[in-house]
Length: 211
Image (tube, rainbow, N blue to C red):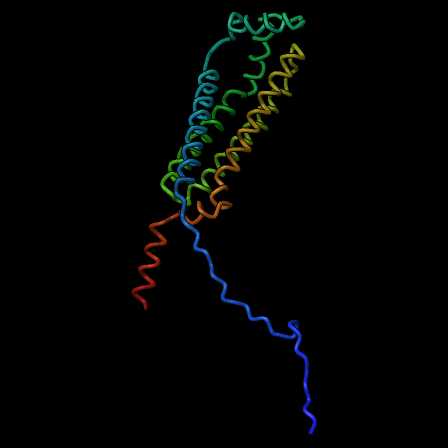
């Protein structure tokens, strides 16, 4: 009687997958505190800039040309034919269009929102994300508005116009940074797990009681 035999190859064996072990994500509130602290610092700077613009806009009468004498000397040293009187007249022209009032209001509101956002994120509250996004968006609007006002009046010097445009680029960069910074807790898993610890603990207690 012939016995049948077969050859089993290793590939024919069904591979059994072991249980997938999920590694728990450890909350890292320190990241939220760092983000919150940076937002508070940025909010204070925006608040100071806004208050300065509002204070300048409230000034009555034409600007004293002596204030821009150092600026005029620097531009003259760079080869620009410009006087402090022309610089003062330029700033008076953009002031009449509401430059200082609009930018001061936007920066003040943005500064307050960024400070509130920073405090909330420092305390691991997720509401700080939305408030921070609003504050950063106001800084972006501030940069666009500032560029509009500067372009609405012809500058007496190309170098002065370039300097002011570079300043607006810096403000735009700050606005983008302050808009993206509150989103970091949603990207970083450790920071995301650290948000709203009281709500998570209360939900766990509720689940335990229901069981």
